[in-house]
Length: 167
Image (cartoon, rainbow, N blue to C red; front, top):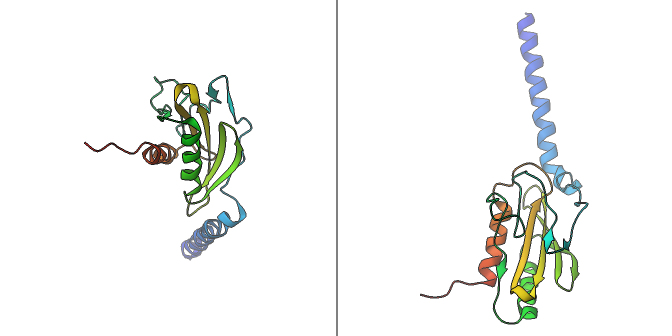
Protein backbone atom coordinates (compact mmCIF):
# COMPACT_ATOMS: atom_id res chain seq x y z
CA UNK A 1 0.00 0.00 0.00
CA UNK A 2 2.84 2.41 0.72
CA UNK A 3 4.29 1.67 -2.71
CA UNK A 4 1.01 2.64 -4.37
CA UNK A 5 0.84 5.90 -2.48
CA UNK A 6 4.49 6.68 -3.23
CA UNK A 7 3.85 5.93 -6.92
CA UNK A 8 0.85 8.27 -6.96
CA UNK A 9 2.83 11.03 -5.29
CA UNK A 10 5.65 10.58 -7.81
CA UNK A 11 3.25 10.74 -10.76
CA UNK A 12 1.53 13.84 -9.38
CA UNK A 13 4.90 15.47 -8.75
CA UNK A 14 6.12 14.75 -12.27
CA UNK A 15 2.85 15.95 -13.79
CA UNK A 16 3.07 19.17 -11.77
CA UNK A 17 6.65 19.72 -12.90
CA UNK A 18 5.64 19.12 -16.52
CA UNK A 19 2.80 21.67 -16.22
CA UNK A 20 5.13 24.29 -14.76
CA UNK A 21 7.65 23.67 -17.57
CA UNK A 22 4.90 23.90 -20.19
CA UNK A 23 3.61 27.13 -18.67
CA UNK A 24 7.15 28.58 -18.76
CA UNK A 25 7.50 27.69 -22.44
CA UNK A 26 4.07 29.08 -23.36
CA UNK A 27 4.08 32.23 -21.22
CA UNK A 28 7.84 32.78 -20.87
CA UNK A 29 8.50 34.47 -24.22
CA UNK A 30 5.74 37.06 -23.72
CA UNK A 31 7.21 37.87 -20.30
CA UNK A 32 10.72 38.13 -21.71
CA UNK A 33 11.98 35.21 -19.61
CA UNK A 34 14.32 34.08 -22.38
CA UNK A 35 15.53 37.46 -23.63
CA UNK A 36 18.47 37.81 -21.23
CA UNK A 37 20.22 41.05 -20.37
CA UNK A 38 21.86 43.42 -22.79
CA UNK A 39 25.64 42.99 -22.70
CA UNK A 40 27.56 45.49 -20.60
CA UNK A 41 30.24 45.96 -23.22
CA UNK A 42 29.15 46.78 -26.76
CA UNK A 43 30.82 48.77 -29.49
CA UNK A 44 33.81 48.74 -31.78
CA UNK A 45 37.04 50.16 -30.40
CA UNK A 46 40.61 50.06 -31.72
CA UNK A 47 39.50 47.85 -34.61
CA UNK A 48 37.88 45.21 -32.39
CA UNK A 49 34.64 44.12 -30.79
CA UNK A 50 34.69 43.03 -27.16
CA UNK A 51 35.60 39.39 -26.54
CA UNK A 52 32.81 37.14 -25.26
CA UNK A 53 34.94 34.49 -23.59
CA UNK A 54 35.28 30.83 -24.41
CA UNK A 55 31.62 29.82 -24.73
CA UNK A 56 30.76 28.58 -28.22
CA UNK A 57 27.70 30.84 -28.60
CA UNK A 58 29.23 33.74 -30.53
CA UNK A 59 31.19 34.61 -33.67
CA UNK A 60 33.21 37.69 -34.58
CA UNK A 61 35.30 38.88 -37.49
CA UNK A 62 37.74 40.39 -34.98
CA UNK A 63 38.32 37.12 -33.10
CA UNK A 64 41.77 35.66 -33.89
CA UNK A 65 41.78 33.62 -37.11
CA UNK A 66 43.30 30.71 -35.18
CA UNK A 67 40.11 30.61 -33.07
CA UNK A 68 38.02 28.61 -35.57
CA UNK A 69 35.11 28.30 -33.13
CA UNK A 70 34.60 32.07 -32.94
CA UNK A 71 36.23 33.60 -36.01
CA UNK A 72 34.15 34.47 -39.03
CA UNK A 73 35.39 36.49 -42.00
CA UNK A 74 34.27 40.11 -42.24
CA UNK A 75 31.79 40.91 -45.00
CA UNK A 76 33.78 42.30 -47.92
CA UNK A 77 32.30 44.75 -50.38
CA UNK A 78 33.36 46.46 -53.58
CA UNK A 79 32.52 49.98 -54.57
CA UNK A 80 31.02 52.68 -52.43
CA UNK A 81 31.16 52.14 -48.65
CA UNK A 82 28.01 54.18 -48.03
CA UNK A 83 26.11 52.05 -50.53
CA UNK A 84 27.35 48.82 -48.88
CA UNK A 85 26.40 50.17 -45.44
CA UNK A 86 22.93 51.08 -46.72
CA UNK A 87 22.50 47.62 -48.25
CA UNK A 88 23.39 46.06 -44.88
CA UNK A 89 20.78 48.19 -43.11
CA UNK A 90 18.15 47.23 -45.69
CA UNK A 91 19.04 43.52 -45.41
CA UNK A 92 18.74 43.64 -41.62
CA UNK A 93 15.44 45.55 -41.76
CA UNK A 94 14.05 42.78 -43.98
CA UNK A 95 15.00 40.03 -41.51
CA UNK A 96 12.22 38.74 -39.24
CA UNK A 97 12.38 39.65 -35.54
CA UNK A 98 15.31 42.05 -36.04
CA UNK A 99 15.36 45.30 -34.08
CA UNK A 100 17.95 47.97 -34.75
CA UNK A 101 18.90 49.30 -31.31
CA UNK A 102 21.76 51.67 -32.16
CA UNK A 103 22.58 53.20 -35.53
CA UNK A 104 25.47 55.62 -35.80
CA UNK A 105 27.69 56.37 -38.78
CA UNK A 106 29.67 53.18 -39.26
CA UNK A 107 28.18 51.18 -36.36
CA UNK A 108 24.99 49.13 -35.90
CA UNK A 109 23.74 47.18 -32.87
CA UNK A 110 20.86 44.85 -33.70
CA UNK A 111 18.84 42.45 -31.56
CA UNK A 112 17.50 39.28 -33.15
CA UNK A 113 14.80 37.30 -31.32
CA UNK A 114 14.26 33.60 -31.98
CA UNK A 115 10.90 32.63 -33.43
CA UNK A 116 9.48 30.37 -30.76
CA UNK A 117 10.99 31.13 -27.36
CA UNK A 118 12.17 34.69 -27.90
CA UNK A 119 15.86 34.09 -27.15
CA UNK A 120 17.74 37.29 -27.99
CA UNK A 121 21.07 37.53 -29.80
CA UNK A 122 23.02 40.76 -30.10
CA UNK A 123 24.72 41.52 -33.41
CA UNK A 124 27.12 44.36 -34.03
CA UNK A 125 28.39 45.69 -37.33
CA UNK A 126 31.24 48.13 -37.94
CA UNK A 127 32.14 49.67 -41.27
CA UNK A 128 35.83 49.72 -42.20
CA UNK A 129 35.68 51.73 -45.43
CA UNK A 130 39.47 51.78 -45.87
CA UNK A 131 39.62 47.96 -45.90
CA UNK A 132 36.31 47.60 -47.84
CA UNK A 133 34.84 45.31 -45.17
CA UNK A 134 32.07 45.31 -42.62
CA UNK A 135 33.17 43.72 -39.38
CA UNK A 136 30.54 41.66 -37.61
CA UNK A 137 29.93 40.08 -34.24
CA UNK A 138 26.86 38.04 -33.31
CA UNK A 139 26.39 36.57 -29.84
CA UNK A 140 23.71 34.75 -27.87
CA UNK A 141 22.77 36.37 -24.56
CA UNK A 142 21.82 33.15 -22.81
CA UNK A 143 23.11 29.62 -22.71
CA UNK A 144 26.34 27.99 -23.63
CA UNK A 145 25.62 26.87 -27.18
CA UNK A 146 23.82 28.63 -30.00
CA UNK A 147 23.68 25.58 -32.32
CA UNK A 148 25.32 27.61 -35.10
CA UNK A 149 22.57 30.24 -35.29
CA UNK A 150 24.91 33.23 -35.08
CA UNK A 151 27.32 31.92 -37.73
CA UNK A 152 24.37 31.07 -40.03
CA UNK A 153 22.96 34.59 -39.61
CA UNK A 154 26.28 36.15 -40.63
CA UNK A 155 26.54 33.85 -43.65
CA UNK A 156 22.96 34.66 -44.72
CA UNK A 157 23.80 38.37 -44.61
CA UNK A 158 27.01 37.70 -46.53
CA UNK A 159 25.00 35.99 -49.30
CA UNK A 160 22.65 38.97 -49.54
CA UNK A 161 25.51 41.48 -49.66
CA UNK A 162 27.92 39.34 -51.72
CA UNK A 163 25.77 37.28 -54.09
CA UNK A 164 27.69 34.45 -55.77
CA UNK A 165 28.97 35.33 -59.21
CA UNK A 166 27.66 33.21 -62.07
CA UNK A 167 30.24 30.80 -63.47
